[in-house]
Amino acid sequence: MAHITKNFTEKELQCPCCGKIEMDYAYMVDLQELRTLCNFGFKVNSGYRCESHNAKVSKNSQNDHVKGMAVDIHMTNRYKRAKLLKNLLNSGDFKDIAIAKTFIHIGRGKAAQGVGVYG
Ligand SMILES: [Zn+2]
Ligand SMILES: [Zn+2]
Image (cartoon, rainbow, N blue to C red; front, side, top):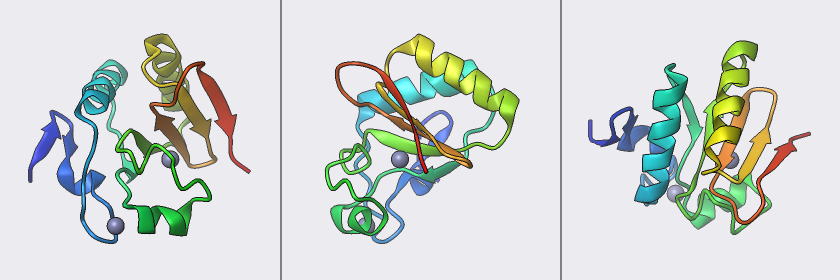
């Protein structure tokens, strides 16, 4: 199993429809830093998406998943969610954060940091 960084494998980040993977390496280095700070496992619900797969699951055709600069991390534990958000906000490396019931979207984003909610 090829690792991209210490705790992330190509397999868990590749597009589920075609296996393509073009994660941005600088993004992955920052994500690994975040993972190390949190010190608990990140279950990746969604990582890299090719344009056609992204079109099936998102209304935003140019979102960060297509650029290899976003992951959705499974998250249902309130304490882990708090720790993840604290480290996300502190790091400043991820401007586009969005909270769903069962996961957190961690996108590179642009300019100002924002926290969205789904639903
Ligand atoms: Zn695909
Ligand atoms: Zn996402």
